Image (tube, rainbow, N blue to C red; front, side, top):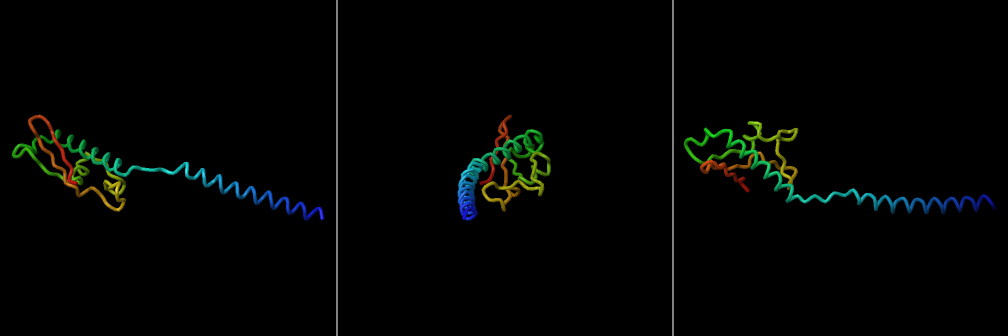
Length: 121
């Protein structure tokens, strides 16, 4: 009779512990959830591309001898070592992990001594 009460008590304790464990584990797992703002990340990547294109235009001023506007692809900025790609050689689109920004056109315009850059939407 004493053994039956002991087994029931241990089962209740185990049940309470298990329920508490799952409740606490569930609450803690949400504490590590990351809520990325994909639009902000995308804008940051575009700004990086613009800065790289500005450096490219500044360093390659001979490209503006015939025309004050040139167009390059992001891939050319990667090839010329102005952008660092991921391990696959791509600049990944933060809005769509299956898409890359390598084929985006970048307009670089030289206006007197200023370099103006626009990235194709």
